[in-house]
Image (cartoon, rainbow, N blue to C red; front, side, top):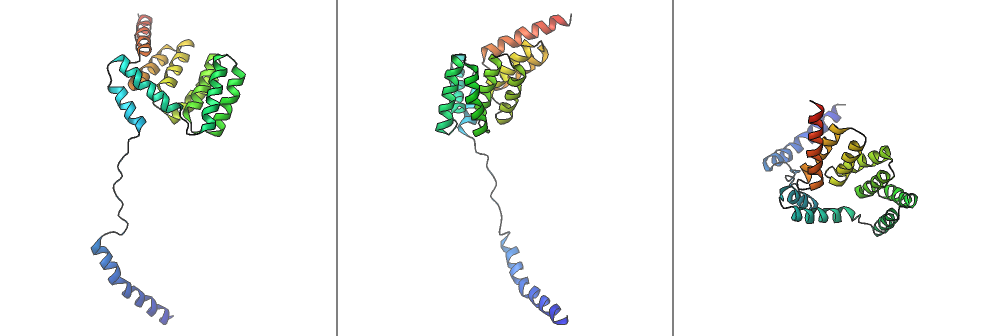
Length: 196
């Protein structure tokens, strides 16, 4: 037992100069300070928020939509095109089949959920649409299209105050969206009239 103690003591003494020199130099694993990298989408959203000309803001919004539509997968992009074609033809079942596959194959692709929310909205399946909007906003909280869809559903179902709140959220992201501006004015006037 005494020999084990002596071996441990010798090992600690031998290691002491190494530890002391390491402390003098500084921590071996000092990490560089993380610098937050802005993505092209972040820059577009910053531009959208600052822009005060309607047409220029619309061009920026169109670029954001283009970013959202790019899934990074050729097969997902083709299925999105097929779903869009079916939606335009009001072939809801076909569109939903493609969109269901997209949400399974690419669950982190926010636009797949948003498109499915849109089809459910067109079919007046508001509960399903709201569930997909919720998923879209969890993935992309700045999705002004999903926010506007949520606001419209809330308005259509008589929840005017919640609809107003949702349209105000749209304007926090996309201040020059004229349709949201008009809805804020209309809903504010209607809610003010109810208070009289």
